[in-house]
Length: 153
Image 1 (tube, rainbow, N blue to C red):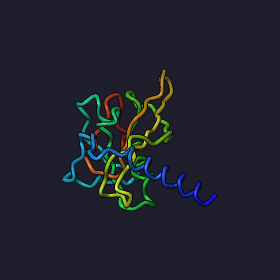
Image 2: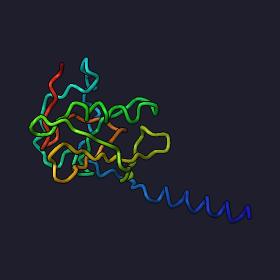
Image 3: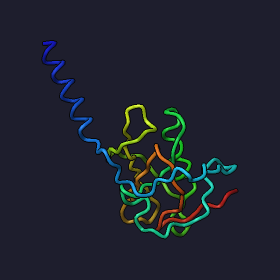
């Protein structure tokens, strides 16, 4: 029985490691990007709109929100999404629905990271929108196409 457990654990470990590519396909990581500024409302101060229709919508162009400790892993996507509205100022709702797309990362003890996928809706939106977030790496932050920007109080 111990042999079967060991073989199963070994198989799962090998399978997990083999699923991570040795090269990242993410195109918009930038370690020189400035740390995001928080507004008094607690969300990220976003000032520019993306010109790239892939930004956030494509796994190779995720929103790179970076975090400093595991305890904060979900806080930066929330800070980013809390700054957004629908295109006409609609209040958005969001939820994390899954993680996917393993990639190599030096910012994780395991040597790999996953992208988080959030589903976003607002009143009148026909089909939910899915955005990809990378919590391990840095990049310049923009408002994705199809979204508006919340006004600070």
